[in-house]
Image 1 (cartoon, rainbow, N blue to C red):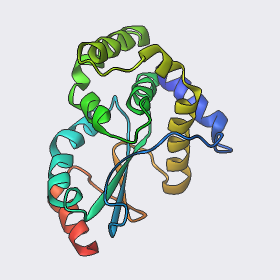
Image 2: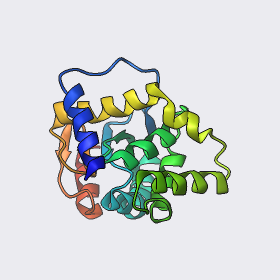
Image 3: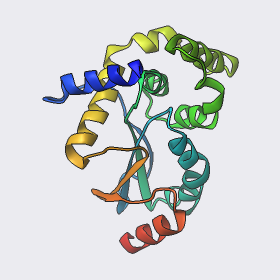
Length: 193
């Protein structure tokens, strides 16, 4: 509860204005000129978001992203301090590559455990080190530019799209209900191509 209160306090404090512009690259995939653009607002501690990455995203990638028909951008919408910290790790290399993000979702149960944020950070750090992800964990957690980028994602999600839950998909500027129903998602995308 303390973690959620902290995140909500941060968001409330900053909700009046967007934080300083950052030079952190968004995590994106696909053809930038595709007719269909998808924004995915998600939290790295959200089980439904992990399910989206494991079950829906691979089909979406195969059927549309890899064919250049869709571009997708993953937006941070941390629901707690652990998700904020994991988002910092996902953005740490600042190369726009979403591989580390997918890795964190695939291994969510290995690091989202423990009774304190210190426990969760320890598991997250061990997972990163064990898998030789070659990032400076402590430096990433302390990076104010990355934090501002993540909080800007969350603030803009609330302001522009009234995001309240994760995962939320925005397809060509409109909210898409039920992001776990791939059949419905596929039909919607096909109408836009």
